[in-house]
Figure 1 (cartoon, rainbow, N blue to C red):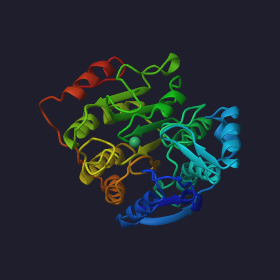
Figure 2: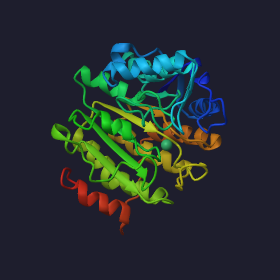
Figure 3: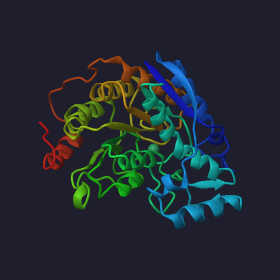
Figure 4: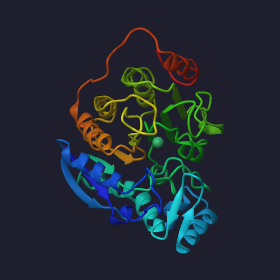
Length: 333
Ligand SMILES: [Zn+2]
């Protein structure tokens, strides 16, 4: 199998004036991870998302404000989020990297893609930056695919809830958004009861997980919720908001995942998607060694074909309470 490693030099030019955990070294760590996997690496330079592609997700006035802010040298946008002069380009290429990966897979150049870019995206909403994120990279890809009549599933295993991705597709029946996240925790959204709105009811699937949880809880969430929901939805494309801040070594996340857990989750996704039509997006993750090793495990797991999830008896309060809500919309055992 071949993986498209999609990145761009501008990802290194979005640099905080102060020490910030979301830093350029994360890109190098993730690139090392892609290269360390057993898949053949195909190197592809990201193209920028066009304004039209960005407008499918973001408000014109928001894009204009962000461009103007960066052109003026940038600064602190909120206590978490910053931009500098080069951040406008970094954000446009980060938003285009997933589109580039999809194009590489459609050409037959690769089976799976990894968008190794920054700033990350899943907290960015239609009209605001948030949580280290400027534009919503995964949402730009999903909107482009939906515009061509495709059904898209987004699985978000970043330790934080992807409030931006949820907000953007809350009304849409064509984009399934599935998030597993530390709760209660930043950004405060992502209760199981947040299930979508209007035609989109049921297509938002939130699995809040109590802090300190590890692989057994996440594997159970995959076998009881994520895999059956994906099978029932039947996506043409799977986009994964792959944050690695759930790793036990991460300084921010407060969870206890290890490298093998990312491999097991990716293996389950590889089975669902028959090892194709899938793009991973680097979201959070602030321990460089955890990023490198977990990215490699993600691609190896996705390609493995191994049924890596344990079939466990017993119960887990986080998963049981999510299943109780989600069973109204999905056939879950
Ligand atoms: Zn995160």
